Length: 189
Image (cartoon, rainbow, N blue to C red; front, top):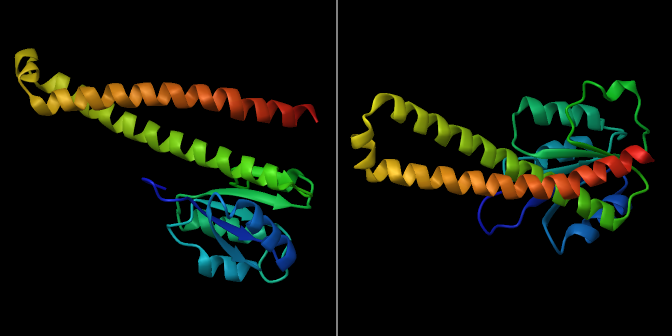
């Protein structure tokens, strides 16, 4: 998700009443797509989707297979398994971003989506910071100090690097306070 656009959340559950209920809880904040099964989810899944709330047990195509397809397609979206299936050792190799056991409240759904979007934004900023820093280092190694000082491009690169560093610091603090607190709260249960 970039710019002022609303994030797109794909809600997947084979029980239409459950999927529609989840959609009602997040629709005011996010753009919502709803799928009532795994096959339908794959048809609605594209690069615009930012978060998938995915049931595990569905008759046509189970959530585990939908998740695997998401990762094979290398889509840049976060996936939360929202399921009545308690965690077992079969989830060790599954590449989901969150695991939420039903029943789940509307507030819990919103918190999950918010947290996943914050993590995604942090990861994107971190990748950009790494790219900008590698460019900065390459130029510092290849150019003389006087040449760098005379370069408007290099000054813009330095400014962007500073902005990203500050943004990452702020985002990390937010993640540490909100998301790690939620993680540890979950561990205490």
